[in-house]
Amino acid sequence: MSKLKIAVQKSGRLTEKSLNLLEECGIKISNGARKLKADVANFPIEILFLRDDDIPQYVEQGVADIGILGQNEVSERGKDAQVIENLGFAACRMSLAIPKDESYNGISYFEGKRIATSYPKILTEFFLENDITATIEEISGSVEIAPGIGLAEAIFDIVSTGSTLLMNGLKEVEVVAKSQAVMIANKTLSEEKQQILDQLLFRIRAVRSAKENKYILLNAPNEALDAICKILPGMKSPTILPLAERGWSSLHAVVRESEFWEIIDQLKNLGAQGILVIPIEKMVL
Ligand code: ATP
Ligand code: MG
Image 1 (cartoon, rainbow, N blue to C red):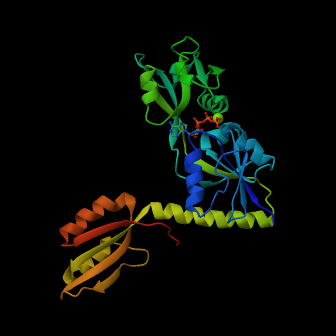
Image 2: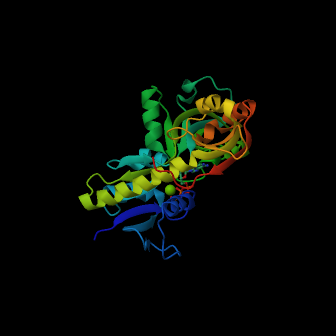
């Protein structure tokens, strides 16, 4: 039986979260010590550990069938692999930054300037679209020090909190693209591998929707139930069970994490008591 080969970053910011995601999908990685490959005991996949720069090429050539990496690397280096799923972690921006004391008056600031980056393709496309002529200095790491050492007047790089920019006396002035971890796949998977991939995607979606939702239990006076049901949609509708105390019910529902605080306030105002909020491990819709 063939195995689906999945490429994961060998050692870096994506490694732990990629492996966690697979583990939450019930995938047990057997030889923990990371070599080039790891076997999985209970699912027909094999894990290849690679530098993230190399993952698009390996997937395009079919050495790996699928890969987990940043959208930024796919946009810069991918040619023929398809993004099949957003994975929601490693969110960041790809931004232009300039020395913090410079005044910024819009994109034309970059006309005739030298900009250091590890993402020349994305930046070239951005400047083309915006009719800017600039010199792109491609460097492979520590881009943020380039202005300080006189290599460039500005940089184009990944930003998440902005603290690296700040430490280097730079400020973010233009967000060119957003990025997050994604899954890419080879375009011509065998039917057998496609089936394994579909199973994996099913599990990934169940894990991710569980994370986005909470299970909520509360007690409420019966006369408030109608109003409470209106703000608690649940998967179909809330479950309502009578309490031993007359005139009261227990109500169970699923709420989105993002709406959680707003809903809690409304519930309290409607007379709900003993509100419990519980994480959901898996959720199959
Ligand atoms: P490799 O040795 O595999 O080539 P790398 O040095 O190129 O590693 P990392 O710094 O480990 O890459 O980053 C991997 C990916 O994590 C990036 O391509 C990006 O998608 C994401 N990432 C990088 N920096 C951040 C950040 N500050 N916040 C969130 N995500 C980030
Ligand atoms: Mg890299």
